[in-house]
Length: 215
Image 1 (cartoon, rainbow, N blue to C red):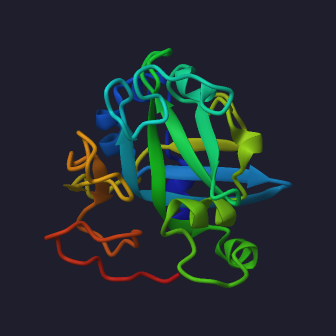
Image 2 (cartoon, helix red, strand yellow):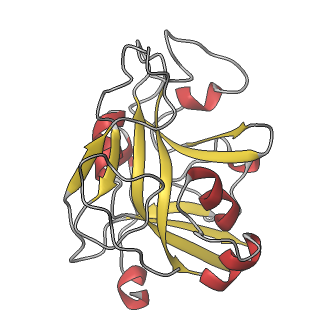
């Protein structure tokens, strides 16, 4: 895959300025790349969740809420929104839309491609490496320092297009950990790359389990 990856186009505004639900699907199969201290880690995006803001009660920008914590959600599409959960785990989102819309896509899982040994060391050899938002942030060395980063211009974190031959099949289901009483709890805004032996955090109900692929 390495030769293919080196020729992949970098995603730009035309992709990131789409709405969150569209972008959550379009990011599947694309490559998230992280460069840190001369080392590269990367992974194919296999699972996402859309948070379109507005009346979505699960979104940090619900009803236009703004704070120091979520201000990056209001940047133009293609910026990073990184937040901390439980005081210890980071989650990385890609902001969507033209700006000031409070939309973002949570990256939930990756299929590791480059720097797998480094990912294992960062994860202290715990597996899976990148199935789940906190795990992938630890494996890729992503934290609050990347909050607000412009993925279109950055040399240390960016997204490349889908490698040739990758499936564009998408499985959809409800998002994880959403209050079941919420008005948008059952919306199919979690997206999983279909047709491959990918590793995801939680299987889509009713869909065949992906065959595990090491690591």
